[in-house]
Length: 337
Image (tube, rainbow, N blue to C red; front, side, top):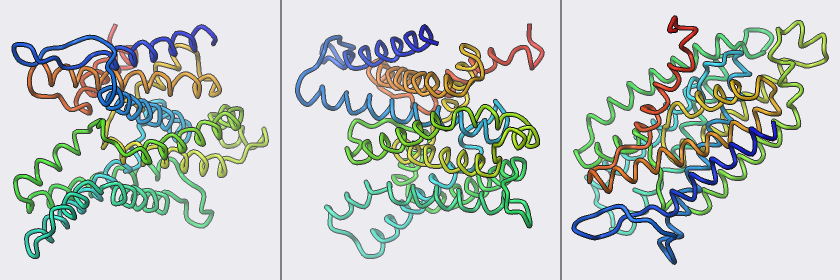
């Protein structure tokens, strides 16, 4: 455990330092330069690294809770429809701004404020998706959460939200359609508001603390309901806890960076391969790997923007990294040798 913790922490620190030191240099065009920046550039890069670390750790930690909730190591934080709900909230917000601007016109300062204020609609969309998923995922009569019903509800919510986003986006002008595409690809921004970073850190620390306190119960809840009950663990309470914590973590991550996939799936899976299924260990290693993975993906995004003059969205980058890696990790189960 100590070796794995030291190694993962070293990887995170190394990736963060490389990301902090690499940036553009104007010399015969834009090229890559190396060195620790100063002043405003240092603050901008540090804010971007912190945003990536918070989002990556939140998604990975959410994956640990969600995979325990559904008893499925292949479950992803977005299976509950959170990503679809939050994204739909942002798309509706953009549509409302475009409609108001078209019919009445807005002062420039108010237009800029409204255009940047997607945080609240993202939270509202995620909250609506969570509430609907919870309502549909309960068993009739008992009110207990049924993992199978929860998955089906999440799939339905994601499908409906995706269809509504396409419908609304078709009515938007070209400029606003590009904004929607930019958001849906996922992004890490160096101008993320400090209060949003503090909120993400607070949610992450609370969720991490709750997980560590309940790590033994999380281990027991991986068993069947009857076995867990015989050991004194209420599966209803544990599922409520897992559902609430994974929902809060994913909603915060989507609000900061948009929908970014594979981080919450890959990092818990790699952690289990390295240190086993013990949840106290998973809760220590998985968030660190998640933060390192997203910082690395964002670094590649920034390098592509300098070298290709066209940034690869970080959500696309995590899919390109996570998809093949996940297939490799699952090669035995899908028949590869």
